[in-house]
Structure formats: C-alpha cells, structure tokens
Image 1 (spheres, rainbow, N blue to C red):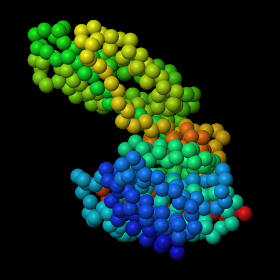
Image 2: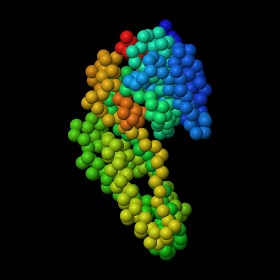
Image 3: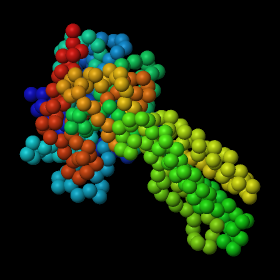
Amino acid sequence: MLLERTRAILADLIAYPTVSSDSNVDLIAYAADLLKQSGAEVRISQDPDGGKANLFASLGPGGDGGIVLSGHSDVVPVEGQDWTSDPFALREADGLLYGRGTCDMKGFIAACLAMAPVFAACNLARPVHFAFTYDEEVGCLGARALIADLAEAGIRPSAVIIGEPTEMRIIEGHKGCFEYTTHFTGSGGHASIPDAGVNAIEYAVSYITRLLELREPLKARSPEGSPFTPPWTTLQAGAIVGGPARNVVASDCRVDWEMRPVTSADADFVKAEMRAFVDQVLRPAMHAVDPATDIVTHVIGEVEGLEPASHSEALAIARELTGRNEADVVSFGTEAGLFQKAGISAVVCGPGSIAQAHKPDEFISLDQLDQCLGMLERLADKVSR
C-alpha cells in the first residue's frame, strides 16, 4: 500500500518540470497540501523574486531535537538528451520507474510524503521534519536560505537525513565544491607597444600559475587517514576566455576555476593565498600602468563538504534504521555539509543510484523505493513513545 502511494506521488512530482532555471512553486504547493492533510505545520519561504520556494514542515511535539528528512525539488535539464519517453511523465517497465528526477531526488521526496500519514498516526516523542529545497543543482541556494530561516525562527533540529541516491548506503562524507569566476580588467592597446597597456590575459595566466602552485601545499595539508580519492583538496582551472585578436593587448579576460576542499580550513587557505597574491602582487603591478584596471572574483557557488564525524547522531540513526554498520564517502556534493556547518548532525542515505542521475532515461527501481520506505517505517517506530 505504501509503495503504491509512493509511486502515485512520484508520478505527480515528475509531472512538475522543476528544472533549476524554472519555478518549483507548484510542486512545493502540492507537497504542502499533502503534508497539511496529515496535520503537519508547514512553513513556505520564497526567494527574493518569488519564483522559487522552500518547504519546511513538522509533525509531532514542538521543541528542539527533531529529525529532518531532506531533499531538493529541482532537477537538471533534459535538452540535448535522447530520452525514449517523455521525461516528465512517469513510465514503468520491468520494476523500474523512468522520468527526470526519479532518483535525483523526487523518489525520496515521494517516499517521505507517502509516509507523512504514518508519522502523523504515531505518538511521536520528538519532531519529524520535512525539508524540500530549491536550486540544489546550481549551488545549494535554497538550502542556504532554508537553514538561515530556521535559525531566525529558533527551530533547532538535531539530525538530518539527506535522501540523495546512494542505493541506501550510508554516506558520512563528501568533499565540498567551490566554484569561482575571476575577471581581469586590463588596459587595451596596440600589440607593437604592449608595455603601454595592461594585458588582462597575461595577468590571468599569472593568477592561474599561482593557483596551481597551491596544489603541493594542499597535498601536505591532507588529513591523516583521509578517505577521499584523492585524499587532498584539489584545484583546477576549467576555462580561460579573453582577448579579441593576436595583435591587440587584451583588455578583458575571464578565468573559471574550482576547488574541492576536504576541510573548510583548506578552502580558507586557498582564498587567503589568492587574495594576498592579487592585493600584494598583481593589482599593484596593474595599477602602476593604469589605475582603472582591476581583478574581481565572483563566487558561483560554495557548497561545503560533509566532514566525517566520529560522534554523529545522524550516522548512528542511519545505522540503526538500515542495519548497516559501514559508512562510505562519495565524490558528488550534497546539501549535507550546509546542515553540518549549522550544527545539525548530517548523513546522506537514499534510494536510487547516482549512476542514473542527470542521464537520459533516468530511473529508480521499485525495490529501492521499498527499501527506503522500510527505513522510514523504522524511523517512525524509533521516534514513537
């Protein structure tokens, strides 16, 4: 019965094309209505433009110490992908459910919504919360806003399960993903007198060179026993764009770069080093020729990593609910690190495989949804008096 309800809810969720570039408010309204039917107290908060919304709902007694079931409502685009059926219409074949977002991560959201009446019927000893966010795929923007909203409202959960697709394996850690674009504004001119201008490309190259020099100290900073592959924080420049022609001193250049920090201290180290290099070396040299030149770095997204914790309530709960003692780390990012940074114990565990995420004919198996429902049913037992 629960599995059939989950499948029906998932079909409804898939029908909302909540690509990150589009609104998710209709899906959030749908989820809010289902949760209200179970008696949940529902909070909806919107982004400044009103086109995106977060949902936070609570069942059970008030007070601190609740357990959050969290998932993002946005999905990646389908353009350019070769789907064999409508990606926004659920299709079932051989025990698999196909559609954009089935595993990443509307399957988990559907299971949570299907379980809401079960939680509501329990005599809950501690709150069970539902957190559904916007724009995870483009920088975890919704989760940042939701966590800030909870802090302002004085709502203090103690643990969160992020239901990203892990095939119900327990994930205790992942690296962060920090993405930046650095713009170099130079002073153009004729290539025959390059010293009269400030070549933005040349300063961009110097910037990249210094950035990559930090790779070795980052390796030395790798925590002992780091479970990641590679075990240290990585850096790379992904794109450099600038200059109109070979015989023109370039007045503009852009560098897109990223790092995958193992610890937040590594991220702070890189940012401090690059800021000092710009302030003490590059910008003074540019201003000596033309004070109007500049270097500005824009944050595209800073998604904190989930650092494995030796004493983690969320990890202990996940082990109890799944019966698994082992915990792994993964290479992909989630919202878990944001919750952890806010003082909420976090773990990642959900149905489906990350191997299917973002691909054409994305799917989740009914068996995985059934396993997820089993975990949530055991959670209901655990938090009941």
